[in-house]
Length: 204
Image 1 (cartoon, rainbow, N blue to C red):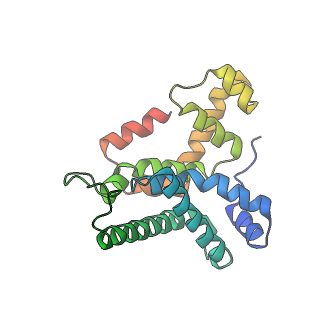
Image 2: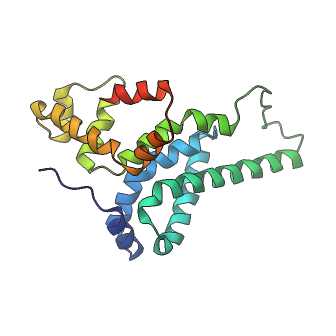
Image 3: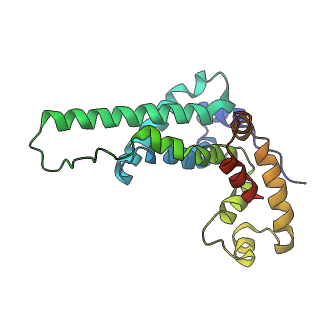
């Protein structure tokens, strides 16, 4: 039998009490989601890291006051957007204050804005939020299967310890569990487009 989903609530309580292992588990689960949101604002890797650190700091400050720990994915998305916008606003202000700054490059009038970038990455964020709720072995397997190019089953067995003959059944169980996560259920309930349904089907 596979281990049940690790209770996010228990991780949050332990991390709030100073358990560093619990905190690292939270970071491992949600870092891909956080980085995905911030990158949607077209920040550099260094800027993305700065904003991410700020968001993690905000989470530390609010860990013991979160009323619904399982809502962490949504909290992280909202906070990441707010901090990225704040960062961009401060950069724009700096540029306006120093119009002769040669390091500031003009942005094309038809360049997609942050909102458009976020719309395009919405499904990716939903997927990452759902993956964060899975047991670590199932999460690792799905992430490997989503790589391009996809590793061979022999390589997947080496990296996960899952026997080659069990990879298919484990994938099926992982996908079934993924579809029941709050993030994915909420997205499906919102009415996915035909393209969304095609993408979801391709996961199976």
